[in-house]
Image (cartoon, rainbow, N blue to C red; front, top):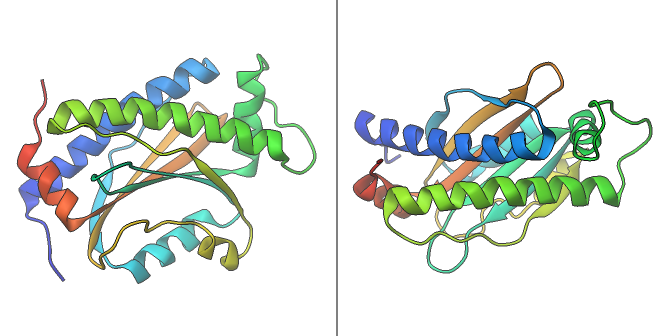
Length: 200
Protein backbone atom coordinates (compact mmCIF):
# COMPACT_ATOMS: atom_id res chain seq x y z
CA UNK A 1 0.00 0.00 0.00
CA UNK A 2 1.23 3.46 -0.89
CA UNK A 3 2.65 5.26 2.11
CA UNK A 4 3.38 8.84 3.08
CA UNK A 5 6.85 10.07 3.86
CA UNK A 6 7.47 11.22 7.44
CA UNK A 7 7.52 14.82 6.20
CA UNK A 8 4.15 14.45 4.48
CA UNK A 9 2.69 12.77 7.57
CA UNK A 10 3.86 15.76 9.60
CA UNK A 11 2.28 18.17 7.10
CA UNK A 12 -1.07 16.36 7.21
CA UNK A 13 -0.97 16.22 10.99
CA UNK A 14 -0.17 19.92 11.28
CA UNK A 15 -2.85 20.90 8.76
CA UNK A 16 -5.42 18.78 10.61
CA UNK A 17 -4.37 20.20 13.97
CA UNK A 18 -4.72 23.78 12.73
CA UNK A 19 -8.14 23.01 11.24
CA UNK A 20 -9.21 21.26 14.44
CA UNK A 21 -8.06 24.22 16.52
CA UNK A 22 -10.31 26.51 14.48
CA UNK A 23 -13.16 24.02 14.85
CA UNK A 24 -12.58 23.96 18.60
CA UNK A 25 -12.80 27.74 18.72
CA UNK A 26 -16.23 27.52 17.07
CA UNK A 27 -17.33 24.88 19.59
CA UNK A 28 -16.04 27.09 22.39
CA UNK A 29 -18.18 29.96 21.09
CA UNK A 30 -21.27 27.75 20.89
CA UNK A 31 -20.90 26.16 24.32
CA UNK A 32 -18.99 28.75 26.31
CA UNK A 33 -16.50 26.05 27.34
CA UNK A 34 -12.78 25.84 26.60
CA UNK A 35 -12.09 22.98 24.22
CA UNK A 36 -8.78 21.11 24.34
CA UNK A 37 -7.58 19.19 21.29
CA UNK A 38 -5.22 16.21 21.12
CA UNK A 39 -2.45 15.84 18.57
CA UNK A 40 -3.87 13.99 15.53
CA UNK A 41 -2.85 10.55 14.31
CA UNK A 42 -2.29 10.04 10.56
CA UNK A 43 -2.53 6.70 8.77
CA UNK A 44 -2.81 5.38 5.20
CA UNK A 45 -5.73 2.95 4.99
CA UNK A 46 -8.14 1.28 2.57
CA UNK A 47 -11.93 1.40 2.49
CA UNK A 48 -12.30 -1.76 4.61
CA UNK A 49 -10.03 -0.27 7.27
CA UNK A 50 -12.17 2.85 7.43
CA UNK A 51 -15.37 0.90 7.99
CA UNK A 52 -13.68 -1.03 10.81
CA UNK A 53 -12.44 2.22 12.38
CA UNK A 54 -15.89 3.83 12.19
CA UNK A 55 -17.48 0.74 13.70
CA UNK A 56 -14.95 0.71 16.54
CA UNK A 57 -15.29 4.40 17.41
CA UNK A 58 -18.84 5.11 16.30
CA UNK A 59 -20.97 2.53 18.08
CA UNK A 60 -23.38 4.19 20.50
CA UNK A 61 -22.72 7.63 19.06
CA UNK A 62 -24.20 10.30 16.88
CA UNK A 63 -22.03 10.59 13.79
CA UNK A 64 -22.27 13.78 11.73
CA UNK A 65 -20.76 13.71 8.25
CA UNK A 66 -19.74 16.68 6.10
CA UNK A 67 -17.90 16.32 2.80
CA UNK A 68 -16.61 18.94 0.37
CA UNK A 69 -18.14 20.58 -2.69
CA UNK A 70 -16.93 20.81 -6.27
CA UNK A 71 -13.53 19.37 -7.22
CA UNK A 72 -12.03 18.97 -3.75
CA UNK A 73 -12.59 15.54 -2.23
CA UNK A 74 -12.56 14.53 1.39
CA UNK A 75 -14.86 13.73 4.26
CA UNK A 76 -15.20 14.73 7.90
CA UNK A 77 -16.95 12.74 10.60
CA UNK A 78 -17.79 14.09 14.06
CA UNK A 79 -18.54 11.37 16.62
CA UNK A 80 -20.21 12.19 19.92
CA UNK A 81 -21.72 9.85 22.48
CA UNK A 82 -25.41 10.42 23.13
CA UNK A 83 -24.74 11.94 26.55
CA UNK A 84 -22.27 14.42 25.04
CA UNK A 85 -24.86 15.49 22.46
CA UNK A 86 -27.29 16.23 25.30
CA UNK A 87 -24.61 18.17 27.19
CA UNK A 88 -23.80 20.30 24.14
CA UNK A 89 -27.46 21.06 23.53
CA UNK A 90 -27.95 22.08 27.17
CA UNK A 91 -24.90 24.37 27.03
CA UNK A 92 -26.09 25.97 23.79
CA UNK A 93 -29.43 26.70 25.46
CA UNK A 94 -27.71 28.45 28.36
CA UNK A 95 -27.60 25.52 30.76
CA UNK A 96 -24.74 24.23 32.86
CA UNK A 97 -24.12 21.11 30.80
CA UNK A 98 -26.54 18.65 32.36
CA UNK A 99 -27.70 15.84 30.09
CA UNK A 100 -31.48 15.54 30.00
CA UNK A 101 -33.08 12.12 30.53
CA UNK A 102 -34.71 10.23 27.68
CA UNK A 103 -33.79 9.29 24.14
CA UNK A 104 -32.33 11.60 21.54
CA UNK A 105 -34.81 13.32 19.28
CA UNK A 106 -34.77 15.36 16.07
CA UNK A 107 -33.92 18.50 18.02
CA UNK A 108 -30.75 16.87 19.34
CA UNK A 109 -29.73 15.75 15.84
CA UNK A 110 -30.45 19.22 14.44
CA UNK A 111 -28.39 20.78 17.22
CA UNK A 112 -25.34 18.59 16.70
CA UNK A 113 -25.63 19.04 12.92
CA UNK A 114 -25.42 22.81 13.38
CA UNK A 115 -22.44 22.33 15.69
CA UNK A 116 -20.64 20.32 13.01
CA UNK A 117 -21.62 22.87 10.37
CA UNK A 118 -20.06 25.68 12.39
CA UNK A 119 -16.95 23.63 13.22
CA UNK A 120 -16.36 22.60 9.61
CA UNK A 121 -17.10 26.07 8.29
CA UNK A 122 -14.22 27.41 10.37
CA UNK A 123 -12.05 24.46 9.38
CA UNK A 124 -12.72 24.96 5.66
CA UNK A 125 -11.67 28.61 5.84
CA UNK A 126 -8.47 27.57 7.59
CA UNK A 127 -7.73 24.85 5.03
CA UNK A 128 -8.36 27.28 2.17
CA UNK A 129 -5.73 29.62 3.57
CA UNK A 130 -3.22 26.79 4.04
CA UNK A 131 -3.41 25.25 0.56
CA UNK A 132 -4.38 28.24 -1.60
CA UNK A 133 -7.49 26.51 -2.97
CA UNK A 134 -11.09 27.36 -2.13
CA UNK A 135 -12.58 24.64 0.04
CA UNK A 136 -16.33 24.65 0.60
CA UNK A 137 -18.55 22.21 2.48
CA UNK A 138 -21.83 20.41 1.89
CA UNK A 139 -24.65 20.37 4.47
CA UNK A 140 -24.24 18.01 7.45
CA UNK A 141 -25.88 14.58 7.74
CA UNK A 142 -26.44 13.14 11.22
CA UNK A 143 -26.79 9.42 11.95
CA UNK A 144 -27.53 7.71 15.25
CA UNK A 145 -25.24 4.66 15.31
CA UNK A 146 -26.48 1.83 17.52
CA UNK A 147 -25.81 -1.24 15.37
CA UNK A 148 -23.26 -2.11 12.68
CA UNK A 149 -25.88 -1.64 9.98
CA UNK A 150 -26.08 2.04 10.94
CA UNK A 151 -22.44 2.44 9.90
CA UNK A 152 -23.39 1.24 6.40
CA UNK A 153 -25.89 4.08 6.15
CA UNK A 154 -23.15 6.71 6.59
CA UNK A 155 -21.77 8.04 3.31
CA UNK A 156 -18.25 7.89 4.66
CA UNK A 157 -16.53 7.53 1.26
CA UNK A 158 -18.28 10.01 -1.06
CA UNK A 159 -15.39 9.80 -3.54
CA UNK A 160 -13.70 7.05 -5.59
CA UNK A 161 -10.49 5.28 -4.65
CA UNK A 162 -9.26 2.61 -2.30
CA UNK A 163 -6.13 4.09 -0.72
CA UNK A 164 -6.66 7.12 1.44
CA UNK A 165 -5.40 8.98 4.49
CA UNK A 166 -7.36 9.02 7.72
CA UNK A 167 -6.65 11.57 10.46
CA UNK A 168 -8.12 11.15 13.92
CA UNK A 169 -8.34 13.98 16.45
CA UNK A 170 -9.83 13.87 19.94
CA UNK A 171 -11.24 16.86 21.81
CA UNK A 172 -12.86 17.52 25.17
CA UNK A 173 -14.21 20.23 27.43
CA UNK A 174 -13.11 19.77 31.02
CA UNK A 175 -15.08 16.78 32.32
CA UNK A 176 -18.29 17.76 30.57
CA UNK A 177 -17.93 16.28 27.10
CA UNK A 178 -15.53 14.69 24.64
CA UNK A 179 -15.62 13.65 21.02
CA UNK A 180 -13.70 12.48 17.99
CA UNK A 181 -13.18 14.12 14.61
CA UNK A 182 -12.14 11.87 11.73
CA UNK A 183 -10.94 13.37 8.45
CA UNK A 184 -10.58 11.23 5.33
CA UNK A 185 -8.72 12.28 2.18
CA UNK A 186 -8.01 10.31 -1.01
CA UNK A 187 -4.34 10.14 -1.97
CA UNK A 188 -4.72 12.75 -4.74
CA UNK A 189 -6.03 15.38 -2.32
CA UNK A 190 -3.44 14.34 0.25
CA UNK A 191 -0.65 14.98 -2.26
CA UNK A 192 -2.18 18.34 -3.16
CA UNK A 193 -2.36 19.39 0.49
CA UNK A 194 1.24 18.31 1.12
CA UNK A 195 2.56 20.02 -2.04
CA UNK A 196 0.75 23.30 -1.35
CA UNK A 197 0.74 23.38 2.46
CA UNK A 198 1.85 26.64 3.98
CA UNK A 199 1.22 28.47 7.21
CA UNK A 200 1.46 32.16 7.99
